[in-house]
Length: 171
Image: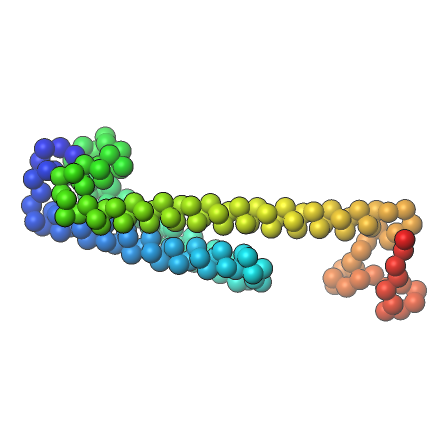
């Protein structure tokens, strides 16, 4: 931030506080969604429930990104537009200690959301890997010598054997 940014008017400082608070609130909402997503993933929620959480989460991420862009614009207008956002935030904390606690909370929430999203990504990857392995197993069973090549019929029900609805097990 430039020397003029160190001498913010009360209105400018209030505006920055409002921007920081808005981003913080949006991040808190995103953190809750990430917890809901983790719970849905760990409890193997129905696909529709996961899609709902993903859709809401995407909207929340877009909101946070927009609010961060507004904060960045405010900081650029007050300081050096070539400075990175982290550098601008650090300068803001140094020059305006009353914002320091709010900015610390903002930075901590950003890190928590990033980490939670990465953790959820690992859960999604593991789920996809497990589903792929299950599909490979089903394909392998269907490809065994003498086995039907199709494990499930078109409506998702097991293929019928000549014995009707009886399950036929082959060794």
